[in-house]
Image 1 (tube, rainbow, N blue to C red):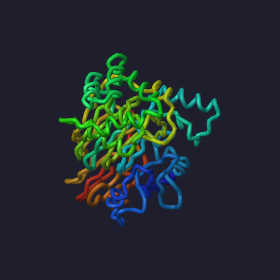
Image 2: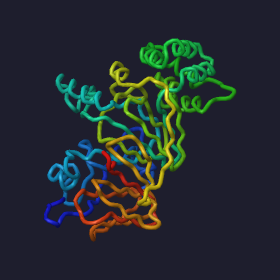
Image 3: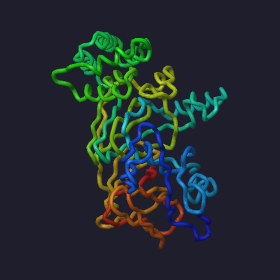
Image 4: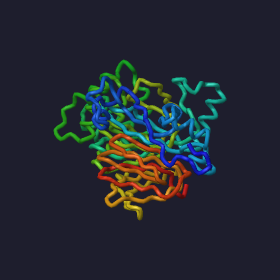
Amino acid sequence: MSTGTGTQLQLHRLDNPIRDYAWGSRTAIADLQGRPSPAPGPEAEIWIGAHPAAPSRIPGGTDLLTAIEADRAGLLGPGNDRLPFLLKILAVAKPLSIQVHPDPEQARRGFAREEALGIPLDSPTRNYRDDWPKPELVYAVTAFEALCGFREPEVSARLLRALDGSRLRRLAEILEEGGPKAALDALNAWPAADRSALVAEVRDAEVSAPDPAHRAAASIAADYPDDPGVVASLLFNLIALQPGQALYTAPRTIHAYLRGTAVEIMASSDNVLRGGLTGKHIDKAELAAVTDFAPTTPEVLEPSTLPTGEELYATPATQFQLTRLRPRPPISIPVPGPSAILCLEGTLSVARGGTTELLTPGQAVFVPYEGSGPLVIEGDGVGFRASVPESA
């Protein structure tokens, strides 16, 4: 922790919590960290940051959130009251929920409304747990599949009709007449007694030339045989990332992650409006109010090289920036603000002001605002730097 007297720590080694959500893999994170595999139960995410739900721990018996609250200026820099990003490793063995995150104004209004209603922050029916938006970026460590944004209606209608089910044909007509919102509303209102039959028209269809979207939907149906979200997946763009590629998801964009291992960075928010493929709370009206139903074509991101040698995955987000580190030759980075360094492969040496930390896969350090000299990274490994854009 910074003391402001010249004796502040240059680097904080992090002990990062593992989240055991049911959709997680029993092998991916354990293999990454070199622990016995398979793990006793699912391991879905490693959280690297200061999110109140699960902050990283630092040496000295405290956590990063507590340290920041004690010395915001030293750790975050002037004018900052929270670490704006949360870095994660995702290990997706089963599909995550279909979900949307609010934009800044929606988050402010929604949080204020639920505060006024007295809904406890830990209530399962709470939609807005803070007043922040939640843009996200995922970087594919392995092949990684995601749903992101709405397809053009005519494309989704063709996918539905190709499965040759009476219920799916009816949905295609609704889509063509009323657009994506009408189709999603119809699925959300589908009679509970008929949902299994609806999903079966996707799962059991015999298609002479199936689209990858058909195969993805049938795979989702194996985990969610009664969930109309299986059919809703055919309304969304299916994105197949190869290792090294990335996908940005803006607020208000409907999405779901289906399978694979990824590094994810997001604004440090916990605002999630769910729309299917989950046993958690679904607020259909609020989901519809937040979602952007305009068809979109998501961009698969490739990196650009910065003067420092870092490889930047550029996004419009103001809360975070993600760069890949392959420090051969060594990389020297000025430290304009707080950052976190994560090792993904091999070994990385992270040095600043006479302090050096050696990182192996799955390990991370926090770099505070205060400190002496640049950040120097070298080694045979691959890693990432999470930081705040200089223009933010």
